[in-house]
Image 1 (cartoon, rainbow, N blue to C red):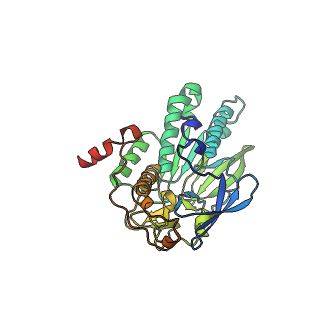
Image 2: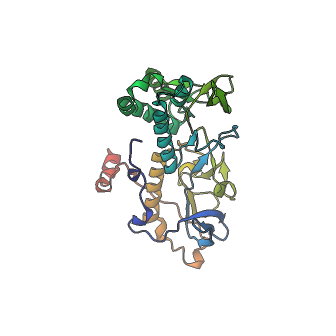
Image 3: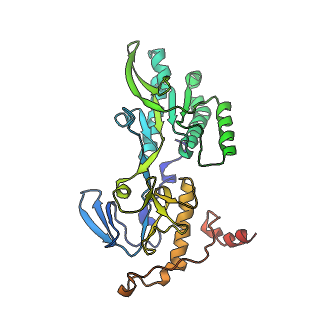
Length: 337
């Protein structure tokens, strides 16, 4: 709720130098024929797209681990945090909870339930969202609904022994301390067993049940507890490691002659473990674009005699340290220093 949607998502059609773009869903990869099978998003029309090089950036989707009632109540009181429309749903639900809680006729049990927010998962996405939610409540909601502040409850739930497991332990401990200072209830080693819908004092209440036997009534649950592969990846013949496409240090998929690459959440380097964050994906995309522009473009892959030729490894690539193209000349200077 702190950013406009147009500040997050940009139209693909406006990308300078864009070749062909199809608003379609990739459904199957044929690595031998080098063909991607697609389905049109509007009519479901199927068509194939041949490729010379393939970059797989399919991301991942939320994993509910079969927890009872999570998928059934998704979009009602449970919300994922993967797409822009999820953000819209969450913002609308938060506003709804506060507006309903202001009703003078609402029972206390229902009011407290509506103002209880649970975030499930201890990864970067969950922790960042919890911080944003806390700031939103204390900076904005406090001005709009001052009488409700004392009834708000924030809970962060993680099944493992700690949060931010892919980061340094010092950072994890620091963030835990900050959560405690903000009076956020952090429950480690606590897995969600399911969600119940009950009637308490004549009011329908949603209850989060945990495997340690405890329960928390809630009005909004944001589920970011884990990820799993999309069907395109899980149904493919790409080599996988824990549901992620295996790549080498050049983001190449093994045994594809340098024609297939993977980046972002769906990719995993066995030699260099990186967290599944947008920052990592952006750096990987910038690196690959430099490799194609400076090195891979030198091989004429359209020539049939080069069809089975192994694409040579790229040379040195300067990391993209600056976030603006106008200052890209500083990248080499900063790297040398």
